[in-house]
Length: 250
Image (cartoon, rainbow, N blue to C red; front, top):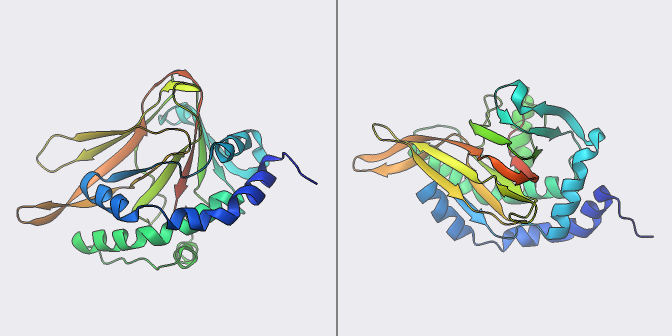
């Protein structure tokens, strides 16, 4: 018997293809873009069907551990919800499948910045490290914006253990569902003005980006720059995004 229940669709229609889909991405190009810009666009990571099913989960409060109204905390305007464990199947699958491809970048960056931390090849081992340190609350989230909403520049740091890269997936279609609402990053370079980067995305596209800092090659070797990310003001419509953060929260 078939069902249109959003959670069931995500579990049955998406999960078998996630590992293969992620493995066939152009990871060399993604790594080069991360090194050069601190972010990398990934076209069509999820299908339009999966986007619609994920966006439909926003109203199902039983799936979440908390809801944040941004205006109450000075974070911007709009709201988001953190998923509870167990995560929706596609979110958990993407989290586990993407992480190993980013570990070499994360370890190389930490070495260049003189940071002793290294990351295990498998996400389950890294999550165990987080949980052993008391970071047990899941961090994948879904965000909802309406007209006039925006997300202030910020960093997603939730405890001592931080994986330096994360992913956002746009679930809505620009021009059809909303206007405005661009993904924005700023890079604060020592003794220089900040650099801004805007990443155009279509429905189903993802962006891999720096959580807090990355190395940049200078004349005297690599130096550390700090990055923040946010979303510009929505001019019309509604926008949903899923965020996949690889560390858990205190």
